[in-house]
Amino acid sequence: MAKIYSKKVIVIKDLKPKREVVSFLLSYSKALTVVKIDDKSFEIIAN
Image 1 (tube, one colour):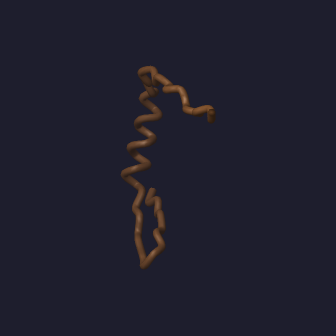
Image 2 (cartoon, rainbow, N blue to C red; image 1 turned 90 degrees about the vertical axis):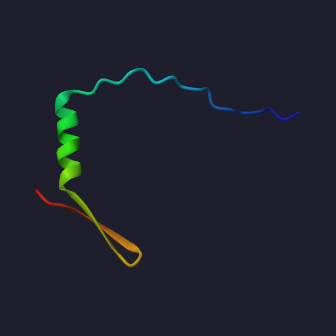
């Protein structure tokens, strides 16, 4: 009989990122612009 391979469920603990990390990600996402032309997309960071 074939053995069933399954991944164990990984429990993620509460993540508490530093204030600097959250600030960096927010400012990065505000500066990021994605321009789609035909089937290509260009990511532009305006800072």
